[in-house]
Image (cartoon, rainbow, N blue to C red; front, side):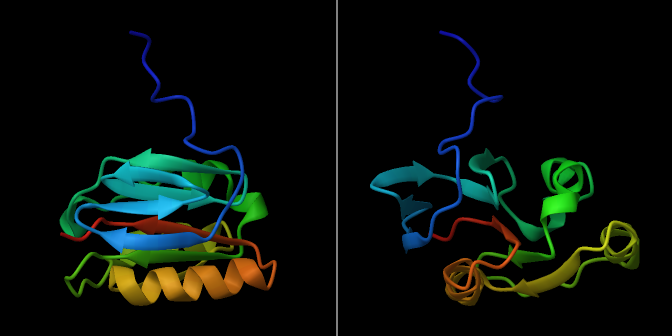
Length: 127
């Protein structure tokens, strides 16, 4: 079977319709695990807990920074504060960082894409 890690689940952005039980539903699709939602595609994201959020885990965000104004990180059910190094790296590419639990992150993301804003979301799945 070919490696599909270089293929997005969806080649565009879409609102998140449901979440929980370790996954998400969007655009008549479902995905188990965390998601990285960029303006041009929705990708699987291997992060399972906030401590795994690093510049490397967000490399697709940095690569797409020219088309992103805001990155929303959904931290699952945990509260997490990113380190100053990650905040500074995002600030250097002119991406505003918003961090909240996954439920509020999805609601904020859906509103922002509904407003056609240049938003990305890194969403940790919740049980």
